[in-house]
Length: 430
Image 1 (cartoon, rainbow, N blue to C red):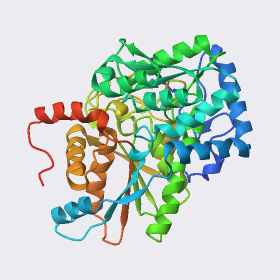
Image 2: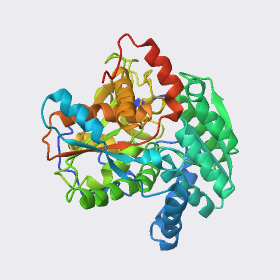
Image 3: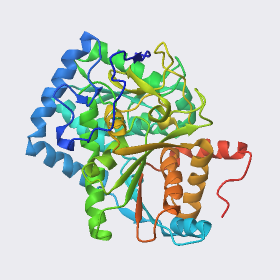
């Protein structure tokens, strides 16, 4: 599971073919253009087939969606607000010395458990019940997906075990405590880099031996088909709400939507509703880490090559032999060497632009948002905020930038304080 495979038959000239309607992908075999698919041991095929069949049935089941939407409204707290960050926008204008775009925040940090992850875990927990299974497992990096999985498991009475890299356990101690309080067993992974990739490896190994009784609630738009499609669909409520809110508050669609990208679930959720609206610019922001050097960042769409990781074909950070590269980010949730196949498809189709923000830039945005708006963002989300500040400065005053604020920063305050104390220069001078 730790080895990514370079693809000898991957087309050399992928071009910029027009992107199909969103309803056209994935194919029945889970392909997003050349990406996606299912590259797994035979022991997992039956479980994936079962999951795909159950999901196809519930896709047409109004009762399932009514139950999920009621839970999202009464338990999760949806819809999350679209909030104008006026003081942040004023800061950008003052620094630019002219009128610039308005910055808005889609407040996923206000969802129950503090991030967008709960949208997916509630849906997958309902699928678990439909499959008659009583145990769920999950991987987690920043801990938010682990907390959201533990929350859904507690709500529905499911046994829950969460795999988490030992380095992430150190960085995200608060979320470890929360998972345990919710009744989940947290399993520290000491192998490899002791981060999200290694936690995912262990979770998939568990599932290979327990799939008859266990459902793996995968937390992002990665992995073998049908996971990328399922997670995207459950997270697409973000973009659907955002589109309706923009039309109501702005009387038009936003000019630019920005989201951070690790595996890519919050970005896929925010972007999906706008893929067929070419006038809306979509920007995904990866973890630029310390530098562009291998091992200093976690930006497969910016610096990676096509390969197979955790069951699907996508952009991966890897060496010439296909060995997965080491990665780094100040944010545990972006510390991953791969990305969802649909993001790879959107990149090659030219529909979404992908860029990076460094650790230092993310920390500056983390502090700046806290001081201008009274909102402490997750370090993951701070990467998107950082790029939004740059983008808004080059836009017109009648234009609007929306940042998908994917999570709140309670989990990150200790790590951010440590990193800020070690920073060579002050950040976010107001």
